[in-house]
Image (cartoon, rainbow, N blue to C red):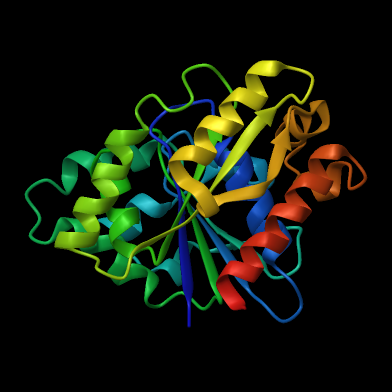
Length: 253
């Protein structure tokens, strides 16, 4: 079974792209091909994997509007068996160009059928627009990063309602894979309070692993590297390794 994981939260700055990139990198191995789909017009997942987004002739936009197939734009990365369907700000135009298109919410799902990968991870934009609806329609699972801050749960109810609406109306097989706390500072009482509050809401869906605030994780994208290439012994690398182990258990056990 092909697993398609939408990493989403309509709030920006929650570690969504960092989580998508490093989870994809860790899940890729000699026996498992992983493709990261950059659905965010900011193209941060693309540049985080060393691709110069401004030089791209074709991106996910061209796939979404039917100008080409994923195989025409997919790029290898420096990590073995990790590939990227890249994006830049052109992808934002898809929100407009797809408005008059029948069944527009299925465009990404139809495209990903042809992608040769055991796991596909979609880095969603920080909004609940047409691009994110496409991701949720295509996905088998949703992973929600939540920042360990005071307003952590603000807006999550809207996201959960959107997930439920897609599940009921378009994609009945869609499930929440889990919720992961990011930018966690164990020395702050607030982080512990947020963890307790999120656990009340999500119970066993909350991953045991928390992603700490870590300078090395923050640095890695500026070098076009995953945390495992940048500093595999850092706290951030160990955390993403642990998260990937939990994800593998939920997907494959």
